[in-house]
Length: 325
Picture 1 (cartoon, one colour):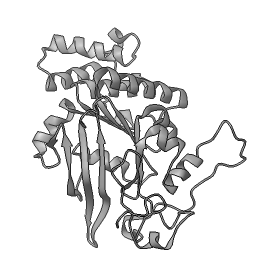
Picture 2 (cartoon, helix red, strand yellow; picture 1 turned 120 degrees about the vertical axis):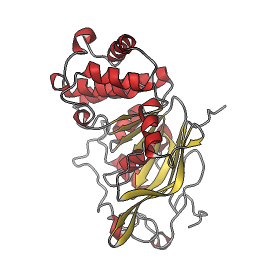
Picture 3 (cartoon, one colour; picture 1 turned 90 degrees about the vertical axis):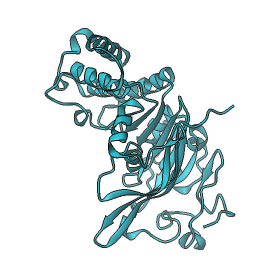
């Protein structure tokens, strides 16, 4: 029996109001994550993956706004909550891990004090109990000599260790959902592997759902259970990570997979997807990928294929010729 989704995003639309009119940045984005599951959300810069995470955690800044659809956490809508209610929800039920840990940590406050403050904000613990919990979290995320390091400041930690502290902060309120936005991008490869392994272990142990936002299909293949591929503000392919990486159906996903270096082949050059992501104010009609697509057909230029509700689906006329625009 499949677990009920912890997070459901249904037909989410985000627009940016400009002097020239509203620009649609997310167009009917739908995805779900079950407890204990890691959903990888992947795509190029500008695809809308980070914007989706920002909308989920309620940190959209004007002129951006949610213009349609809904976001449900444990079956309850959260996209229409007042700002104060959403602030209380963050930390308590939703944790966030960002690309640059320095933006998440106060440089003038020790990591222990930051953890204690977060814990006491969301859990009914005394200062002593909260400090003990902070120590436990630091050990859990692999900070050596946690008893000493708890009183150190962010600048006294390496980049990889700072990111571990940020993960501890995200877990401090015992959230049900963690949105991790490019958590390994600024780290070297060996540290990336440690952080992704840590995320997988903590996800399983805490039963939290994780939305892992990244541009790196390699990280997705190693970490996620399922994947949602985004392009120009839409989900263009979704399915189990093994199915999507081994047999991608959308031409864009095929291009992403072809651009990953392979140990089995000795190609002199990496393959690339020609062209660039369209600008919000110059979105092409039909399938947004058609100007870059190597297998484009005439109907791709005028009609938008729908992403069907199947375990492995792609919004492509080649895959779903019966789809409606």
